[in-house]
Length: 294
Image 1 (cartoon, rainbow, N blue to C red):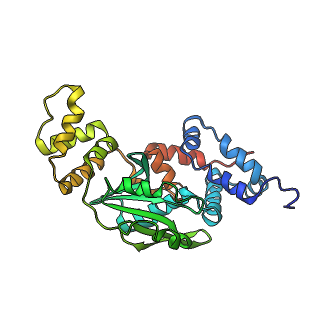
Image 2 (spheres, helix red, strand yellow; image 1 turned 135 degrees about the vertical axis):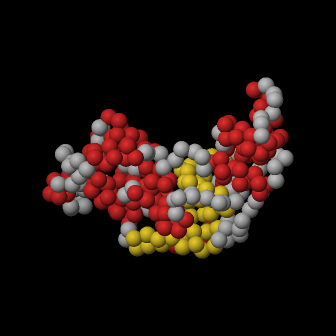
Image 3 (cartoon, rainbow, N blue to C red; image 1 turned 30 degrees about the vertical axis):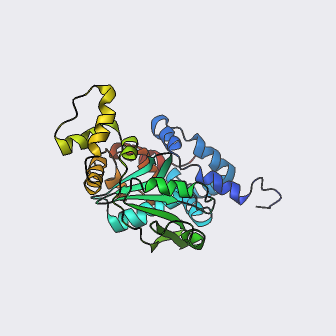
């Protein structure tokens, strides 16, 4: 297309491409058969391509993902790469649970993995800054046994001397859309766990379950005193045992991690964040396999 006639830049197009990978967009497709968000982007940027190739929505999504993985590696691409190359290919999903955006104090872990060890992954793309990074990583180390910073291969030198040596470094490698990961530095194992942070980060029933698991019963107090009394009981547990009980409790959560391998790579992170089940996955797949009519 002639650059004078093009009403947008490549960066704008890619940024709009990346915006389709949102839970809201796919919930609208699933619940209301509403493809309007995808249709708007398709019509603006790829009308001729879609008409010529008679693409389905899923084929178009694959094309979009390939485009951003090559030229606009946003957080979604990083998360997807961790799920595919680290979780599925290295750890396996049988005994691991992945949680998207796990709150710790005033920070949110981009991706948390729980198997025999609790692992936090903080992502910094080329479009991010170091702002708040030190605070974020400090927060994560109050709860997680291993903390990793995930950056692109050409950003490693920028960050490796900036973060504490206890923080692991993972680099995203690749040319075009063929991405891989490399562990530049392994995280140092940490057993410390802050009970007050734990209480704020997990659900009420979860910390109650931990107390029951360890002590056989809950404290006999009013509901108003229960939080404080449970916190006091957890503080009686050694850090290493509390870590094990924490992981054990988190792994009870209803979660679709063990299904991720069956999902197409382009939408694994999206379906994890939606916690989509097999029935909904089948229904959504049928909808996405429709041909696009603009």
